[in-house]
Image (tube, rainbow, N blue to C red):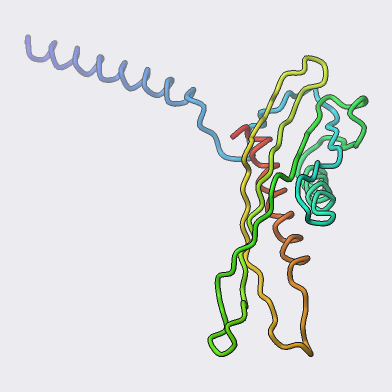
Length: 182
């Protein structure tokens, strides 16, 4: 009789433990990406002024700004503007540096045939009313490889398309990071 009561007590304790564990696990903050926005729900608009360019690369800030604006428009409900005065928050961006490194050389000529470009940026999202920083990252790094043609007749400057690809990838990752608060 005693062992039966003891078994029931252990079963109840195990059941209570499982119930408590379930509640704790359910409330731990894990969620499927894209299902739980971290930005305030009362926001209607975000200003994205032109990124600052600290590099010598011509118009790179324009490409990155345009890509970020496009991603916010496509993936969020916010009205995007360039005027910080008429927005609930402002996304500031800065292209800090751009570096290129050769990775592949033509064995016959010794010329570079493939380069890796690395871009460092700073990004912050600040709420207008409270001036509270919602998202901040001082070193967002993106890398991409681009080919350099050695044939003079069919030479095509690949740097522009490489930066276009990088700006799209950067923007997609940034919007995910900002909306999911990673």
